[in-house]
Structure formats: structure tokens, C-alpha cells
Image (cartoon, rainbow, N blue to C red; front, side):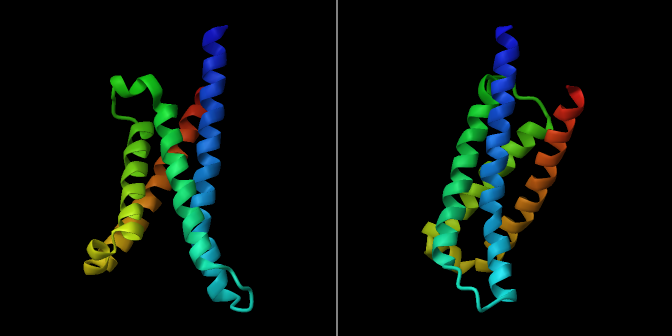
Length: 135
């Protein structure tokens, strides 16, 4: 029975990660929404701060979600998602806090961040879909 509860808790943690990830990705939606409806005043700097915070929280929770499985790494959508999430978060931190590096190759970092995020959404979707089918 204990194994069952840890599985339920791990799945619940996975859904929390998904919520924080969606909140982090919502920055792009709000940014596009602001360009479509310029009358609505959305503070872009605050949105970017929340984007970073939610993404960092999602990444930390993803490490906790992976848990003991980090010692037995195998090729799966979960590990690919974790690796991509770390890379996307680190690139985001680089762009926000290390302006000298970021400004020099701004478009490269921005497009890499966006491209890896799109791949991350796909791998997370496959990861969730796979585990929903296994239940």
C-alpha cells in the first residue's frame, strides 16, 4: 500500500510541475495578447519576473519528481523532459541576468530558448500521455 501512495504523490507532484510550467509559458501568451490588444496594460517586467520564478519552481519540482530515478538514468521522455527543462531554464536565466553574454548573441539565445521550449512541450506531452496509458 505504501508504494501506491508514493506513486500517487509522485503523480500529484507531476501535475504541480505541469501547472507551474504552464504558468511559466503563459508569459508568451500574455506578451502576444498585449500586442493584439494594446489598450490592455500588462506590466511586461512583472510578467517576465513571474515567468522566471514559475519556470525555476517547475524545474526544481521536476528534479524532486525524478527522485531516486536519477541514479538509474535510462532513455525516456521523462529524462529528456528534465534535461530540456534544465537547459531552457538555464538559458532563460542567462538571458535575464547575464546581459553581456545575452546581448552579444541575442537572437541565437532567444530562438534556442523558444525552440527548446517547443520540444519540451512535446516531450512532456508524450511523458504524460505514456503514463496515463499505463494506469
